[in-house]
Amino acid sequence: MKKIISFTLFNIIFYGLYASFPVDEAFLNNNYEEKKFKLDTFAFILGILTTILLPYSLLLLFIRKKNFRGSLAYGWLAGVALLIIIAIILIGLLAGGDISWMIY
Image (tube, rainbow, N blue to C red):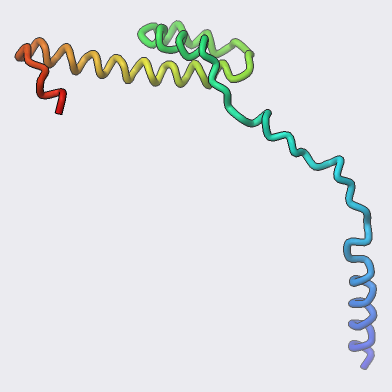
């Protein structure tokens, strides 16, 4: 009987204490624009142009401009893709001179 009374008493106390403290909405961070990635056009073009000089262009990673490093990395990836496409076209031209197989 003693256990039932103490259990009921604790349940009543915990029910009264549940969410009885005020919640301040000032602590909520609803600023989602800071987390969005915006492509820096200058860094993207610089990344494409410096793909061949990749060991030297790693020094550009020390620039602390917002979204610069991410845009630079995307530029490097685009530059690598362009180099692969150019290499495929050159191999096709040197092998047979006919690039009609690339259309399909």
